[in-house]
Length: 492
Ligand SMILES: Cc1cc2nc3c(=O)[nH]c(=O)nc-3n(C[C@H](O)[C@H](O)[C@H](O)COP(=O)(O)OP(=O)(O)OC[C@H]3O[C@@H](n4cnc5c(N)ncnc54)[C@H](O)[C@@H]3O)c2cc1C
Image (cartoon, rainbow, N blue to C red; front, side, top):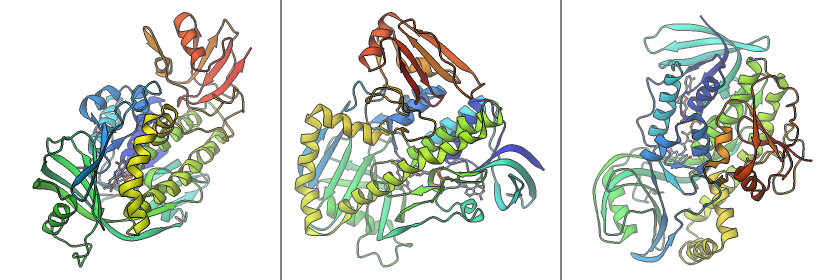
């Protein structure tokens, strides 16, 4: 019999990050997954800057950046000719220590998180499928079925469903998943291809009817290709790689030789989001709560963000550092972002895959011009980076945000990244707990309703000058949440 304050169901990226956060804050929990280990599939490739910033707090960002690579450009190939080559390089310079578009396969992200959990003395209970669930008082009871056929009962106060798009827990909790499924059938293939063009970044290839996106992967000639299945495919659940090979050659239409593939599959794109991320003491996170098109490489990153948001709050409640009402802020903060993401990625994807002449004209002529022009203007470049990198996410409307602070840096916003000779602002946030920054010799502030750890920093000298340039008050107190968002900005 397992008795635990928190049961995390699912050890994909979301569940692993949640477990990592719970370890970071010393919260007892159990994490289970029906699989026998982490995924062997590449799946998500794009790791956004906000994810790397969160990895930095765990001390695993350097390993991630050593293992992955920066995708610094996008090439538009229209009917076999390069129409535009747009370099974005360090598009977010000055905004994040990771100012670029970064590639590291999902399987490696999962390994990094699993290794962090092991280093904290934790373990994942693999081959353990939640097959039955009942509400019991404020908590839950249920049954795990192990790989050897044996069963084990469990009892928990809090339950977090990180079971992915088909989350059985969502069904067991009777939480509807409204939305729709796109009519098209897509394919994804990890291929080896010898291309004459340099392997530096994304490659978008289109002809009159079709569109393919190529994402660089870690192998020397390895790319992920995504597109709509060609009409020659009769059964979208069963087709040969040769059909894809011919299709890719036709649409790409530049000298190239496909020499192999490691994985390919058909899939449908859904856009769905649950009505609420919380039901009683059960929570949904990651793909279990929201699914959308892969446009923009946001899915895994959003699940990781959900886990970071929920992790410290759940830990604080089971550690008795704060009132359980803080848990309401999880849905308040994460669902609005999820709603916006599902809508925007769906719209972007529709334009990219539409066969209408307007959409084709937009993709082949307008988009390269818009992108090239936008990147030449710093304010537009910064907006693009902040949006895609998830560093723009803000929780101003949350019940945890008190409205304090100037318009540009208000309670609920992400704490800004800035540097000075010999230091940077994120090093203040590498400990566990709220951080109280005192500027200009101001007296300290309590963190209301919080008895957990608080780190005090007296900001002086070059650090104070850099802080003021970044919008912090010359004299006052800035309180930062454990997940690096502003709780309070007081000018005195
Ligand atoms: C082709 C492709 C490309 C993608 N590209 C990107 C990208 O570039 N960037 C990006 O951010 N995202 C991308 N995504 C999306 C990304 O893969 C998902 O968003 C991510 O895997 C979601 O993580 P998760 O942990 O929420 O769910 P999952 O990864 O689905 O993990 C769920 C886990 O829960 C377990 N589980 C389920 N039910 C139970 C149960 N009853 N008991 C025990 N365990 C259970 C499963 O075994 C699984 O391990 C891509 C997806 C695909 C398919």
